[in-house]
Image: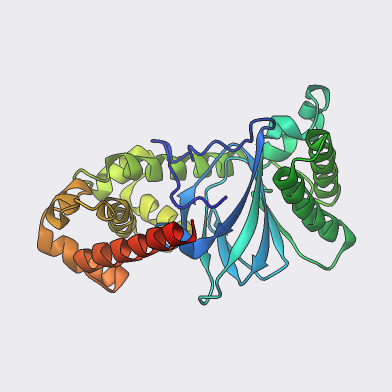
Length: 307
């Protein structure tokens, strides 16, 4: 299954239900370029995430760190971490994404010792999983195994899936870092979430730098430092980019009006919206709408023909 548009709540938490009917896990095949934004936007979720790149290269950002994954390489992203992904050099990156509820990893009796300390550690936001060591290869192969088990749904696949995930977690924590909890780092991550959440909730309104800084209980200068460290851009540039991002979904509606869309996502004039949209997307909003609808109708026609 491909998720083409990430639904987020007011706290930037992903609303997608990461579970099958039987299990509190989900496994997706994702092609980055097929997302409505052309990339996977900034978000977080309670589930831990395992990634395996099957084709091309992807740039995965976790908090302020960017990691390039090549074909065959993987990544562990811890619970609650802000992350996003984009294609690297138009390589057609697609990957398997396995999201697992921390409470499913091990039985309740073992959770407090072997899961909770690891998802709360501030020095383990992610872990690169390469192909050099046996434990890394075991985890990557396990991702493929879980994907196959969920797709096939053979008898007792739930038990097999649970056992594979148990072994994945054991490989990860046995070869991880000594755990640390830094209150300063935890507060930093929380404030960044608060500021980005504020933008995602109020992007349709007038937003000032003071508003953003205040939502994170920071000064203007500290606010700018946070955004530049994590997102490599200023807070107001992030606001602008997010407004463009939200306009893409609206423009895909057949009856969408460019002027109405611009005002709905927070631009105070149509000309300014068109100018900023063109700078970001290399086309006008109207051209984007026409191109999307043309491609969509072409896909629907092809489906009808094949049916």
